[in-house]
Length: 418
Image (cartoon, rainbow, N blue to C red; front, side, top):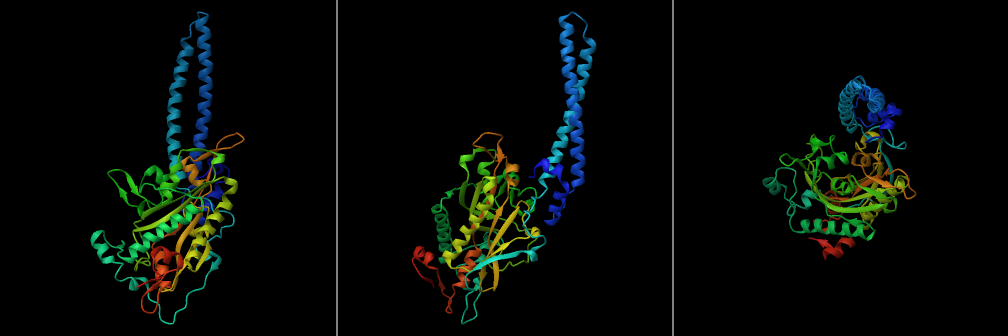
């Protein structure tokens, strides 16, 4: 949520930011409603002063034995008018709040303007693997252990069923990633896999992404689309001490997404599914240090891929490719040898104080003063199953076996999956 003072001071900036993100907002309607509210508040303050003056006059007249009926009548009239105006302000406040939920975060000044064609490749690492044979896609290499038909009988299309070494590889990767994060100083969180609407609103999945989420109507709960939701909401409506910052968290969660409107887009195999697993990184940071924290999260996630020996590239997303809530985002893409394309495996985002305002997450300055909103950041560290796609396709041998990177071979107890 954006600062209301900023909305009043520079509505043009908000409108331009929304346009850059391809979001439709009606700034004029907000300005009109806010102007009406401020006019009503002036009238309310005048009535409150008038009622206080009348109350004092009534007291003085009663103490002196004079008749105060006229002043009492005027005070009652002012009170009735005050109730009407306060109800109007309350209704406008609700309307303003609903409109503000639909205003996207403002991209940072160094974010390129435009769509995904304007994303900037910042750096890359690793060599694209070369083969003496034609590399195959993962759905051929995993034919016996990845069974979408069986998953379809159980849950429907675009769900995953792993068995044998694929199930074990997924479990091993989750365990390794959690260990990697906690050894770097993050606290592991095991969070609920469902969330209330209030939690979804705080992290800005609602109202924007409602059509992409699974909802349990009877209980008014949502299956989480990302671990960002429950882990960030651990601090919703909380007041931290400045000394508590930064808060560095990680946690495993399944993620559930309906992927509304995405059918036909790279649906083959594990590319796009309704449930996938990942380990999420969340950071709550002092506003003055959020840029450094953003870079630290990016470097940490990239370091994991280097440990796995997977070629990657880092993109700075343009405004039209940014999420609704992000002020700035780096995408990490990894190479898929069998499909000969790059696949996103992590988005490292800085939300500034956007989520903190929606979720009322603040810190108390050490030297005293008014509580301030924290900055929230997060990123996948890392997302499955695209990580498995890259490991399987890049590590394939001509006989169909899969060579594992040393860090996984040690945990799996085998260098090659046959």
